[in-house]
Image (tube, rainbow, N blue to C red; front, side, top):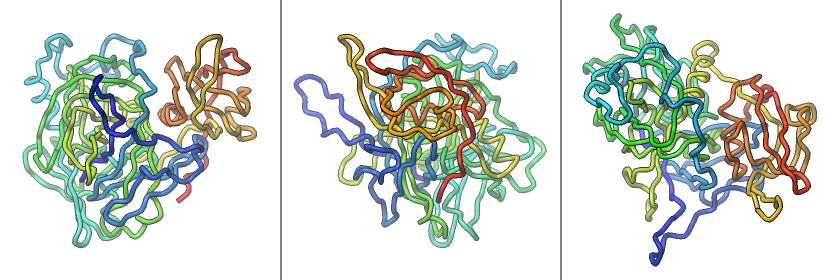
Length: 421
């Protein structure tokens, strides 16, 4: 299954000309997407929704999608814990050390928990990756990996030992690009992945990506966490002969883990693990410098959905087949404001939904949100991604600039209305 890609905003060295930056956001999240969200192989891209009206879908299903990112979040905020991961008392690799990871031991520990996923529907199909998350045969992957199955499509799950099993979709959530596949009659010796915590990651931590790039099952690559809370927008087209493909194809906004570990088409849905062998992210997209086709392999900029968000969505998909999302209740646009001699960029509040979390917290039209729980918000996309990653009912601290002064507001997030599409 092809990995979503798109041009990267340039940072050319002095004296060198870089490519022309792409537009990274719309003037309002409820507006149609900008031209950068382009079609691929005749399949269309839908509209980008507001924080309060969640993104409807992302899928590539055998085509290359588009990815854009904003460079407004430094991603270097101190983590809650210096221990990369956490989340589980079980440590697969007890000899783990950030300064000198034992990647051989990590590979042995995690490879049996990563699968290759093949999707066939009519004459089309694609390949991707997935992560075994329990002994019942549930496999966490990207929505765009399996969306091409549609009605009558076939999903095949191949384990690390080469044995293949039929699979069915237990649930899918296009708005976060996540899905759960259930292995039909799974073997008794499945090896579920040990869950870590993306909340404990720090920039510079060593990580390993495991997956099925270009159909090469069981491939591992290593790198570091390059940034955290990177606002990334991915889009693409639903794949295969899915009869619903034309109805659900709006971009997905993620507060992503950026990594230098090489990821390529087919790595989608695979594991990003820490030096202790714990899952910290689901690899989902890559960036490319562009070109006439917009297609390329790894350039050392890959993105993963944080496991704290992925696990929360997976639990809902297994239970109900669908997922609910946190709701702030605002329509933001990119904006800036002055505080003393400094100018701050952030998410300008265009409207506030009556009775929403934002309304109850005292957010007003014209406010500029510049932070969420201590993480910098430099654009509307950044705010969307950070709120999407939160759980319903969680309380967030919003740093807001109003009338030239910064203040803090507390908002308890509600439940988003059902996604349209």
